[in-house]
Length: 123
View 1 (cartoon, helix red, strand yellow):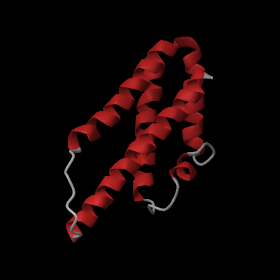
View 2 (cartoon, helix red, strand yellow; view 1 turned 135 degrees about the vertical axis):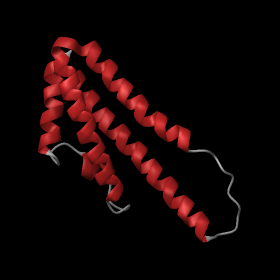
View 3 (cartoon, one colour; view 1 turned 60 degrees about the vertical axis):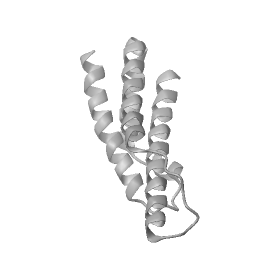
């Protein structure tokens, strides 16, 4: 349990850094290019370590991973509310569209990282 908590604490920090990097990148850059295996050797090593630990305590690791995923999605769900769009174009609409795009990009980055770790842990 201690090893899982230590690894997962490091995972949470590194995952948040990766998400921040993705959010700061140009919107045209594909997420897969920034988040794929081989782009960050330290993160890859951490995921491999989590895979090794999973051989001994898979249920605990999966529970922790799913909790992290729910927390990541829960914070965004509360801040997003549907607003009908008017047909007039204004600067505010453009800013809202960009904000929505960034929130969606963040959600996709969380999904990508979650799937990356899940695949590695379950193989």
